[in-house]
Length: 103
Length: 199
Image (cartoon, rainbow over all chains, first blue to last red; front, side):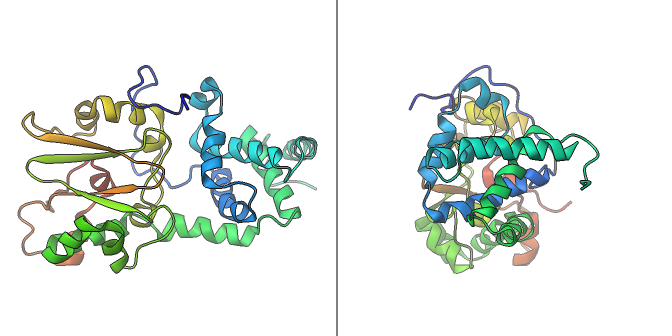
């Protein structure tokens, strides 16, 4: 698949940035995104290859402008809705509720 | 009910909180199990594992040969195995060859020996340039490989995971295996650093 994820040899995707002694996770939400995989995957909604493919299906601009664990989050949203584990509506509603509580 | 946040949640925070709450309600995830996994990869599994493998290879020539012949089995001898390390290939740095690892397509990385990969390994600049300009990338990391030395770049596939066996620095003959392991960094096992003898 000739997506943006196939980055070998590409020009113009930015300068190497190395954070010295970086933490394993940079945000609490990244930890949740990481840990979720191993809870959800065994239920059979998707396997690792489908997970990678969901990320590979991201639009090029979105892919390059989002972070690694945002890619994972995108994959969960895509696959869990496509496979019917959650509905797009209930997810949107829950996001709205959470957003309202946070403020 | 007041929340601990006195600021709006970021977009990923909102989505993750919403998703996790739905998945918990539907019995698809267990938050406690999630916590444990995070703790395992934050504090237990990490490059100190790979460093032990390297130190053993430096001090035990027969182990080193087994490691080069069948990485998964030899790494498994030291008790390191599992997710993202099922199919290990260890590549040896020598005076003639310097090895560099990358996953151009995503972020494949040997979790049981190195833990979770750093952000730079998973990001576009490294993934694009490691294969087209490895000497330039190495120079940015402070590793200057002489022109007469070969640089080999290993692009991880969906299943194979690589680990570099760095060269043992001179002047370390008197160190114990565990003292040697202390010298071995994650970056040396990816190939973007050399191992230095203690100052």
